Amino acid sequence: MNSECQKYKDKIIDLVSGLLEESEIESLQQHLEICPECNEYANALKSEDVLLSNFFTQVDSDMHNREHKILDTINTPEQKETVKFKSFIKLAAAAAIIIIVLFGLGKYGNSNIVWADVVNKFKSVNCFNAVMYWKENFSSETAEIELWMNKDGKTRLLSGNQVIYAQNGQIIEAYDIKNRQEVQADARANFLVREVSSSGEFSLQTIINSLAGKNLEDVTPKINSDAIISQDITVFDIEYNDLEWFRIWALKESKLPIRIKMWTPNDGGSVDIVFTYSKGQPDEFFDPNAFAEAMKNKYLSETNLAYIFLNDPANKKISPVFADENKAFEIITQTIDGKPWSLKDFENKFVILVFWSDMILNLEKYQEVYEKIKNRDDFVMVGVNLDPSADSVKAYCKKEGIEWDQLHEFMKPWKNKNGMVIGEPDNKLAKALGITYFLGNVLIKKDGSIVKIQFLDSLNNWIEALNSNVMLCPSQEWWSNIITQQGKNNGHMSQDEIVQRFGRPDSIENRGADNTVWKYEAFMEKEGRFGLLTIHFYDKSGEIVGAGAEF
Image (cartoon, rainbow, N blue to C red):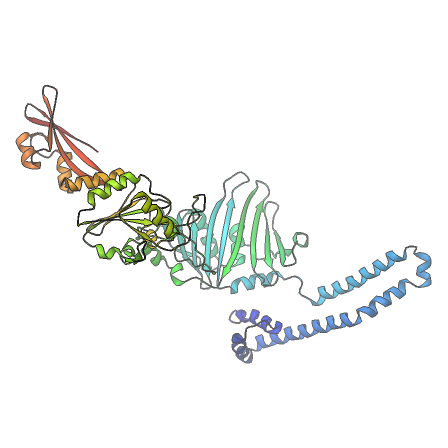
């Protein structure tokens, strides 16, 4: 049977066994009509199936006669004279009958699969995942590589911080998901892929060869009956020298391997591979260009990138829901009274979103913030509650006198009764803005930019600066001029020059007999924190001699 026909082998077996799906029977029969080799193989299996059925029919119908014939033989007068324990002889007779049946099963049945079945079946799968665990010796830390491969030879590996793509055993691209850049594939993954490429295919044999570091084509794994403790699994052993050996576990019915273990007794080093199988993964999962594009999305976490585009067969969640701030403006949620609410309705305004659960911490400070902005037409302050019960939220807001609007969606609990986090908030805005286990504030500016504010004092400072018309986020040029003291005489500037360049100071302090500090206050935003920036100019005898900044 040639390689083109190999894929039909299992279908022929399923056909003879009555397990082939009706949708595949017609195409298989068409192939059998034009392929003499496959047709001959199918006829041989049918003959074996008939022979096996006749055997069990004969065993079943003749079992009673066989039992009596054996018992009659051992119960003859001659046997009675030589054997004292008749009951023991009857047990031996029963054992003899069982031996006959087991012998028949061994001759005609398929109680154990052969290694060739496992190899061929592995080649036929659409997609598989192999998780590989390496230990250099008994005391070393365990390294891990996850590998996925489809029937077209496309391969993806996850090794440490690297996502690596290969095709037919050749590495195409490798990316570091921590630094978000293209890199060279790490040594272990590179070695694995290089060894696989030597045979031009990814198979069980190439996996074993790559782990052993040599070609073991002539070494056939042997069934280890002593290691079999389940009737559903066959265990194979490979012993090719005194220093290393392999063990392979395969399912009897599917003939697919589920685990490979390599052991080095001299130092306790080992490699363990666990296999799972699926119908397939989307094309973009094996596409390095799609991954490179995904890396540009700043809202995707490292976990998101590690498993991007991976589909679970049962549609279970594999990585956290990633934020997409652009979607925040498209979402239509609702107020606690069920009225529709959308950020899109508040364009060209400042919007403060306060995410909370159970209770609002530092409520007094939030009340202060609300008092400062409630009469401004360009400000909106809204609470986003993440609890499942709307009634409890209404009761809390009424009790505490909270006047600003509250948004609420009917959702599954994300914390248990003890307040322990058991999941991510099931809220549209929370998901879009990346609010997971941190409850805090999000400021959306008039230009649509979004800033997460971790500290409430920073929000208060920001509003104070805005209400006082203090310079908001000075330009890079303005900031650079102050820090580098651009001017005459090696950066020294006179009072007239400083006034001409930066305007009159917000305040002046006298320090000692000959020092004066000119203060310029500006608003600075850094890493989600807000504060007033004070610039110091030290003046001696009318000359600016230095500059500094305090935050």
